Length: 302
Image (tube, rainbow, N blue to C red; front, side, top):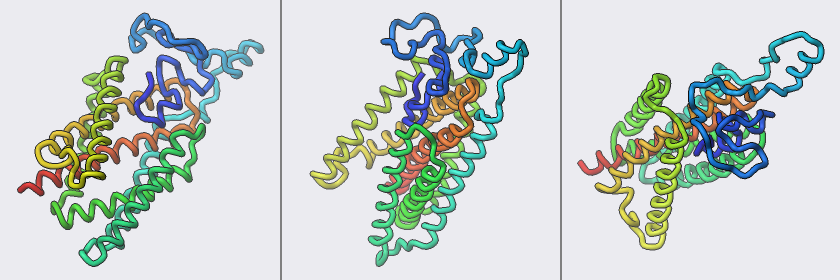
């Protein structure tokens, strides 16, 4: 299973191909590396025991050679503690810089243009850094933390503008909504209410592509025609698409949880925990922005 998140999808945090890129052997139900994909037989997410993707690793071969059955070293393998620690560090950096931007960059009428310019510049650089990291073969902690800091500046200014000029208290409501969504999806995933399988992934990918395409069309109409384009980000349609955006973000979270779980199960390198933190941060920023936009529309219509 490939994640819709570009960070995870390039790292093979998946069950149908083990941990591709981590010397993992192909799993049942997935196409072998280097071959054209064929018909899938059986459910790759069934409860049957999965083949050990590290059966052919050098540690296992050494054990067989010397006749001493030993567990392969795990000190360099990703654990849940690693993911939690790196995610907390990345989100913590984002929150600190968002708070600094909120406090330092004024959003009154006289300084709004300057602060907006800084926010847009930081957001564009953060987007470029995010794309660079998404397509790098290895995680770069410095790059990820720089992205988080710049994204924090962008979110801090935008949140302050919405909170000050459009909807008082919107930022805190968006934070609470994002946290509630994260907890709800995590509980639903852990209890089996959400089962991530091929059909689930296909649905999320199709919905995401349709959503992004509509937003891109709306942006083009807004850029060349002025106003809000086709109206997908204001009024009744804005509320509808805000809800859809939040739901899509929640579905992305479920995919991210599955990718992290599979990465840990199949022994992804410890450094990959930075990529897990980066991917989760991207999804949480998406959800927060959709909540902030939705709250601004709802309170702006009062």
